[in-house]
Length: 286
Image (cartoon, rainbow, N blue to C red):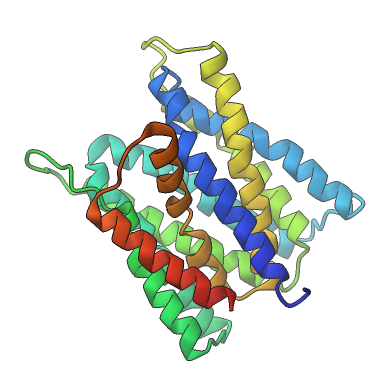
């Protein structure tokens, strides 16, 4: 059981992020902007961080190294989310998401080179299948018209780098810090970036402040926050080259739930992605 502790946390993250992905668009479609959704998400990180601090008897690590590493993890994650908002305003989602979805490549490269993480041939097969599945699950060939400009591409690549580096630093910092301290700094940096999310919000448009706005967003976003907390634990106990690709397969859960709830049948490349993801998860869990 102890050897598979990483798997338990990775599965929780994947499930919670998958459910989160299936319902996160509801508040936005009801008139609650994604940027304000970020604000709600940052606030839902607070109770999760407090639970984490309670677990370690409020003994937060606040030496310079811990603050630096924790802040890097937080800013690359939350900051990447804000950059993604801007990228989506300038460029097509059907091109942006496939680029960003492959961020585990960065984590794998850094972990192999600097952390000397190794995996069996079976595990590497699973990693390759997972990366293929991630791309297929993120790709949406719905683009119309001509795409102009390159700033969106630069921003998408920046998010790709940021999230890949975040997972690597999360693993690296777990060598010298408690997972709960890392999450505390993730929470803190997320709160510090709230003013930027507010500045990116168009308050001239009608905003839904009812239940389907911030309240429903909070219920949904807390799934994201819990998933982020269990991710830190998964990376702590497992190898980043395995955990990160596995948790990035959350869209499989999203697609299955969307099929059940919205009666939306996925296209062929989504089905192929689900098959590859299922095989990858099976091999990783063995």
